Image (cartoon, rainbow, N blue to C red; front, side, top):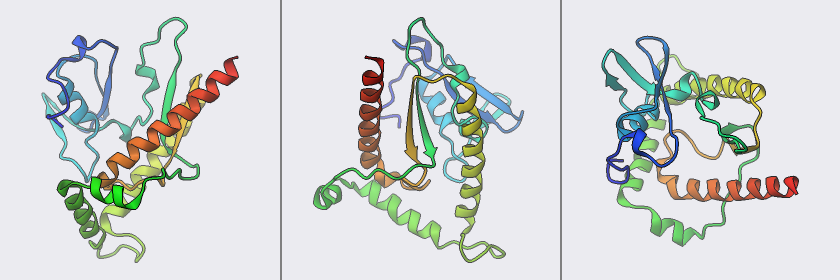
Length: 203
């Protein structure tokens, strides 16, 4: 991450930015609106069971999605702006980009293949008293996903959105880091499609 995230402070960025993490010591949101951009992103994506939490002063920080998966309330609004929201846990059909198998295989780096192997190993881990259907990590992450989705649905009902981009919760699993390029393409396609729909509606 440090290779592609700039060594800058949030307040020096050209656009307003905020990152939300969950403080599991003080049981509340921890919002980064200033300070090191890398630390903010690293804390906000610390998914339990995937990344080690980030320690900051008297706080231990994990993924902000644990208590606020769509942090719209922290967006700084401007006059005549457009509020675009990505809902990456939506209950909608999966969109699959048309990527040739050979190209997909070529694009997988050694790192991505190792992550893929790691995921397979995790899937083989079983909780002694768990059902046959779920392994230990799957059980925990399925539970977290369901809680996050309920919070997301409530948030979307409260706020007025201009563009809502729904991405199916079945698009990838929590350990599918090797799908990075495919997920970027999915995001681009759905963003362009929804922005075009918004333009046509506004005409």
